[in-house]
Amino acid sequence: MMPTHNINLFPTRRDENWKYSDLRSSLNQISKGIESINEPFFTLPDGLTTEEVGCECASLKNISSVLAENYCHKAWKIDVPESFESDQPLVISNLNCGHSQIIININKGGRLSLVEYHESQSNSFINTNIIINIMDKGELDRIIFHDDTHETVRISSAIINSESDTRITQNAISFGGALSRIETIITANGENLNATINGAYLLSESRHCDMTSNIDLLKPNCYIRQLVKGVVKDKSNGVFQGKFHVHRPAQFTDAEMRHDALMLSDTSKIRSKPELEIYADDVACAHGNTIGQLDEDVLFYLRQRSIPLSEAEAMLTEAFVSDVFYSLKDNHLKENILTKIRGRL
Amino acid sequence: MLKINNLFANVDNGNKQIIHDLSLHIPAGEVHAVMGPNGAGKSTLSYVLTGKPGYEVTAGDVLLSGESLLDLSPEERASKGMFLSFQYPIEIPGVPTMTFLKTALNAQRRANGLDEMGAPEFLKKSRALAADLKIKPEMLKRPLNVGFSGGEKKRMEIFQMMMLEPDFILMDETDSGLDVDALRIVAEGVNKLREPKRGILIITHYQRLLDYIVPDKVHVLSDGRIAASGDAEFAKKLEAEGYDAYA
Image (cartoon, rainbow over all chains, first blue to last red; front, side):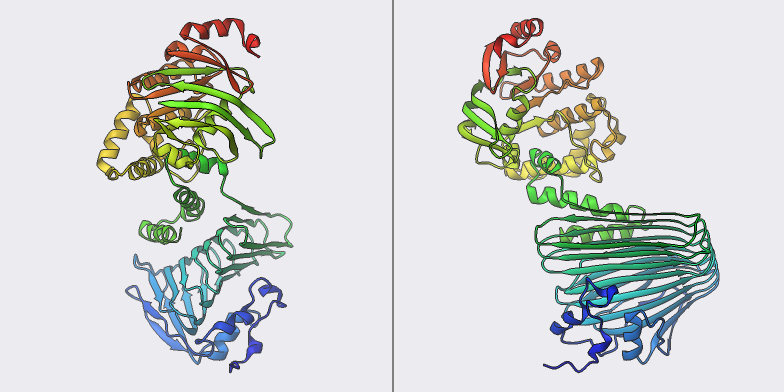
């Protein structure tokens, strides 16, 4: 069957940013969602509302934005008022087929807890483009669940712009899909951003997950910690691309990037591309990247205590992954994540 | 209880023959000690008996209560009652001690057709035994052995041994890294486990531990086989004279 969509909008592996995730080829198996709009469900904390507005292209360099603008005639906008605070999160779900754009403005001193469920039961294509603008002293806590079938193709891209004295924590968990990508693009336009960007992926069968982030620091005194852990087995593919771009005025940046992966089979693959681009001269920036296997001596120790091999492997894998979420304050969400992880081990 | 018959074993894909024609019988209710110089094959023997991957048996047999262990996986041997107290207990970051122990105990119970032990009973049992061994309750919440001192790790091995109540206990250099007080606590723990139905094999360099856990028999392991055997007094003779006569 010939595709009806404009295939040229979708990147190939010749696009450096999509070198390890072949989006165009992956669409061959997709039956729906490539040209349609996706209506998300919002569970709003008291005091917030959604408004339908026109769709915008946040960045021509961002494929998710380009696709959203091309296929969506509207976007959903949420304004978080000044000094807003709530113990209820904003929950976004029903992201299961087609394109959508969501715009969130966190006004001065506002604090938002955002939980996103990206879940599909079919061989659909989903593109979720989220634009978040954080004004001075604003705070964002973001949790992302990616739980799809092995046939789903999904891009979820967040473009986050922050002003001064802002705080971002992000925790993502993905079980991959035929192709699944979590993109986080942060631009610190103001001083003193404090960001923790964590993620974990657990992949089996022939699933593919790509965690890509790009953090642009334009002003001084930003503090960034990134930790991504991956586990691949069977014929699955894990991709990590992380970039810190420290511009000349961004003095006193303190940024660390880590990606640690566990390969549980000979046929799985990990591709990792950490990048630091630094123009300021008084900064501390580091990146670390490891790939390894479960320790045979540790496995033997557990087995010597009657624990069957598969259970011992699951126990050690859980221990490896779960420390990504160690700092998560919401115990209910933490337990929710750990339960999902255990279900996949 | 444990019968080792004409055992030959190698490691490193057959490149190193470590155990040559080793035979040993430890009846139920007895404590035996195997002593020997460095490189005699003492640790290899403990790994061969417990089925560590990479250790290959080329001839002979090992029987526990009449059943051959050699075709069984490490976890099956453990469930049948083989317990190894490790010379170097492993640190496992991210796995709380209590979680590990409860998983182990219930895996063993499942393998033996028993119901899993519920949380209240488990807590009661573990707290009582931990107190006996002077293990602080907060240690049990920490990841297994992470940041523990040498003595604490060895006490944790004895604690696991008391929780799992194995039929046969193998102790590999349990006294190394222990001060006198810790040695006494560990030995008291082991002595409590001396029962008519249980066999114990202590592997050690030095006679010191045997002052606290008095063995029924002492064997010298040299060049992969039992070179000589005797009673508890024999260990003192070995300590005084060294192993040269048996090399």
